[in-house]
Image (cartoon, rainbow, N blue to C red):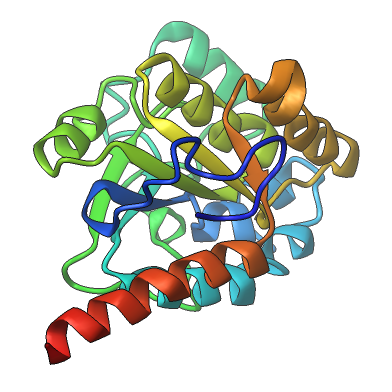
Length: 229
């Protein structure tokens, strides 16, 4: 199990690598670079960049334990055919009209090179805050037998939380890794983490990366013993 708040994860004590995935949300250039969407909205991307070493440590521990790694990327089609009039209005209002920011054809759509992405990792592209909306995310998870999700990435209060909430509604068992998530707004980040724990864990459990890595190391050791045997 992983030591967490308000209960240890998973609730029944059955942490199984084959049924668990680490979800790494939207660690893209458009959110983490000084010229991307996030910076253009007046936020400091250094808050997001600060979690990259922690995310990589969790990725490494997850791989060693045999978990699947799922990365998400947010952006629209290059021709913007998937963008509604309201979304186009918001894009113009944000000063993005005429740019390639948040388009899948742009360099900003790519995951930052600092993040360890393996060839066998799963990548889900999305247009909405939730990785479930208009994507094959849930189908992929069900096909892989995934029932338990560990959440990391950005931003804590928007794409991470929206995906987390939908995952809980779909009865996935969820744990949010507090120091492997980030937001440009410190108050929003703290509030989003707090909301995970209200009502005795309404959105699952909350743990820091050290606790997660410690729990995963037990799985990694078990996997090694089985391989040697």
